[in-house]
Image (cartoon, rainbow, N blue to C red; front, side):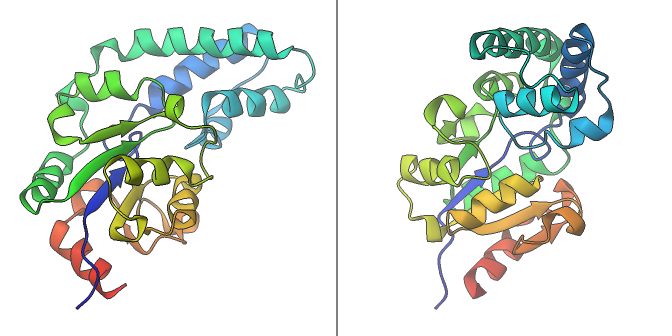
Length: 223
């Protein structure tokens, strides 16, 4: 008999909903305000990493990594977040990625606990706006951890909060840093997206409509 799938831990952005465009617009506004050109290529490098790490990378790209004190960086990060929060006010069920509700239902029907592991402090508000709160046993955001992805802490914390051994959990991610965090936690990694960036995933689907409980549970059991 193989292992039993007891918990599924989801990333938020790019897996449950896609707020990437809102992040892009908010970061672009901030970067432009301090004289840094910001484009989609830079934005792509921010996938899966925390707000402060994202800011550090943007400052580095603009040659301004030594131009601000830690306090000033905190202010800049908060400015970006205020713009982002305004942009996501209108997020709703229509923004849930295809197939996600059906997959969450499958997990519930099979008594699989469900948790969220998101680098966003706004994760609880977004889940509320999407009207998906009833599916999640726990939500872990950066306020509950010390180290962001690719460190496995956020996935290990989620497993602990739902009281499931990491080896009986799957993690679902669309970012390289997230897949590395799942693997570092000793979990089965489901990647959503391209093989080039998610090659370390144990199971890869091209988009969320392909997420299927039976297929994942079968692969997981044989893992």
